[in-house]
Image 1 (cartoon, rainbow, N blue to C red):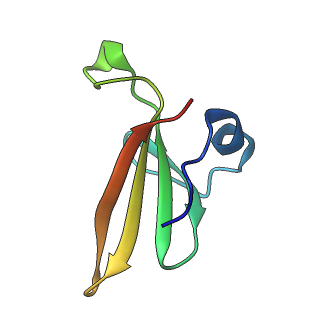
Image 2 (cartoon, rainbow, N blue to C red):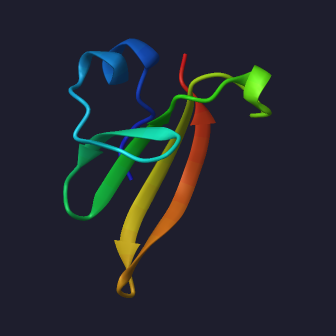
Length: 69
């Protein structure tokens, strides 16, 4: 897994895909990094949640979540 990405770094990247609540910012085929559009007001634990997924055993698995600073 790569380093934790900063909010400025993720916001500077183009959005590759949009899900219902998140923007896909990085996709290497083995790792995906999503930046949530939801906030604390929407019920999230914090603003700017980052979700990191790794592809293993034939599916995407969440391996980390954190607040981008």
